Length: 320
Image (tube, rainbow, N blue to C red; front, side, top):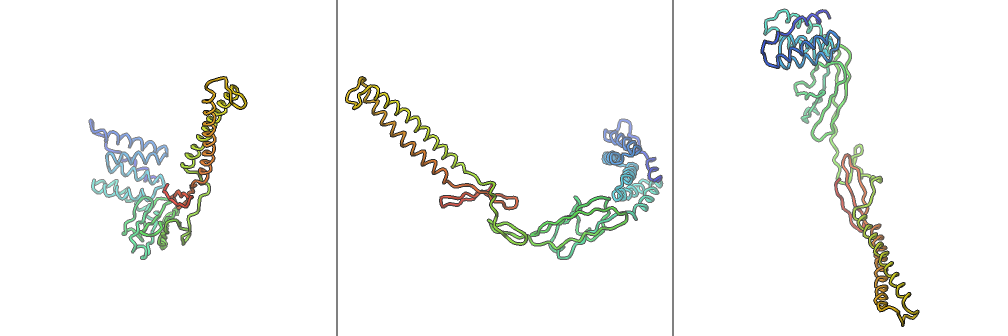
């Protein structure tokens, strides 16, 4: 690791006086990165070097970034960066940097861990999309060992008309190549409306009993019934009061009354009594209708849902 640490002797060229802001920021990030390496805070240091290189690319910064990733344990990333640094050193005619890059490349090469994705011809013929982590593997990279950093990696494949497939691979042994064999992708089973996939066949969509409930029409009708009952109660009270007024002011046979409006009160009592009776009956009938109105049930179909209304000889389906 002495050689690796020696790389940090190659500092960035100092930012020119009055130079642009990016160069000044890059220089500060570079200095911060070196301090973080000395403190063995490698992930933070590598982030600083990477941003410094992005703002103001340079061979010295690239070498420091490669060494930082090597210290962090990202062997494949460091190996790739040393190769880039080698090309830059040759271009800059920096023999000292070129020697360091070649030395690190030679040391890292036998330790590299790789993943090879084996793609059977049957899958290759279906124009699949194959991904290694977040990168799409071009066809030229199929069946080819790809250097990767230690840790967990995800391989996924998707093809038209087939179920997608993915797996995770954990690499940890230096110098080992890990092989991922893609399985034969089964054709996706398309089920008719009202059915869902279960293993290799279609089955009816089960009712979700927990979602059974009353419709808006039920609550509106029930509210109407309540209004009718309230009307019945009010008109009933009016009828009773009018009848009591007649009884208080007329003889038992009502052939003699002390007040002139007794006849109007008697008519009012009879009218409101009929209204009370009719609205009471209407409220009862409306309540009955409310409870025989269609109910809602919800079916589950994968991630989709459908609301089905049943009753009164009708069936309607609406999406949710």
